[in-house]
Amino acid sequence: METSWNSDILKVEYSVFGWIAFVAWSTSFYPQLFMNFSRKSVVGLNFNYLLLNNSKQTLYLIYNASLYFSSTVQFQYHKKYGFDQMIPVAVNDVAFSVHAVLITLVLLFQVVIYERGSQSISKITIGIITVVWVTVGVCFFIAFPSNSWLWLVSIFK
Image (cartoon, rainbow, N blue to C red; front, side, top):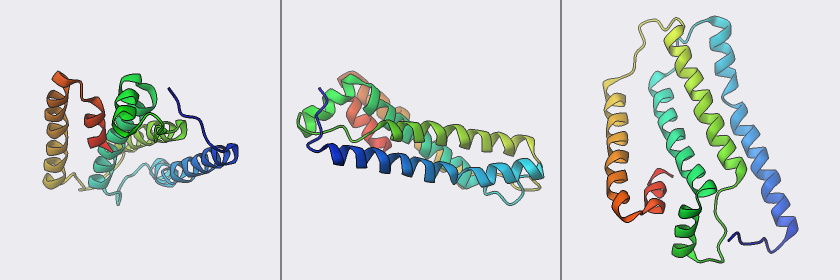
């Protein structure tokens, strides 16, 4: 059901720039990771950002993986937007999402095991994360009876 590219040059450019973006965004995680490791401390790292970023990346991974791997979600996408339309997720998008979730989990693990001073996660962040994941759960139960998986994962984008 995959729509073909109308230009081999565009296909190559799309792939090359996609992987360049993957490398650029992925490498942005490592300085903090290495600094935490070398200092054995996460003092100064914003835990709120880290937790919010992990939730965002997890939801984006669900979206990317669903659109890339699920034939049901792909069919629903084509049904909604046209069977001549390409799925807007490439393998580099899925790879980035997996990488981002794993790295943010490692950073969260560093928060648990390294010196953190008096820093903690704010109640506001805990409230936001709770609302987000409760909303995800509610939306799942809304989507489940009608198999509206495209609608569900589009919320995650």
